[in-house]
Figure 1 (tube, rainbow, N blue to C red):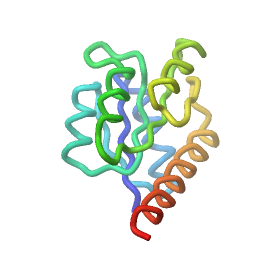
Figure 2 (figure 1 turned 135 degrees about the vertical axis):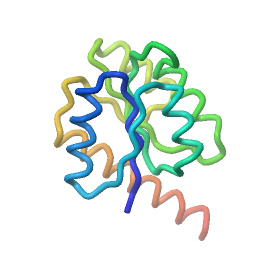
Figure 3 (figure 1 turned 90 degrees about the vertical axis):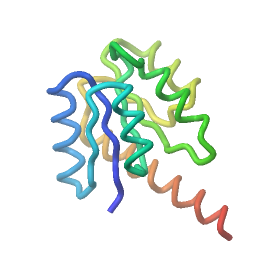
Length: 128
């Protein structure tokens, strides 16, 4: 079962993302800050990261940048309630998909599915 890391400092947003993803059959790991999200990434072996951008300790931009440094970085879905400029910046830093808050569950599931498909194709390419 694919494991999705949810990183968001807002509890209501974490709960919504978790509910949508677990109902769809994904296993979730939840972090309430960018720092905790990075630790969870290191410890949990996640397949996709869904991260908020506006967080007080480690900003979502920083988290995306740090994750891109790994040999096989996870695909990142960035979410933000602050506007499209931040979402475009997240894409330029390496986020594969971006979603505006409040997150539409259908769009979230589509982005996660596409991220998992992309990861699978990359694994097949590297192994074959």
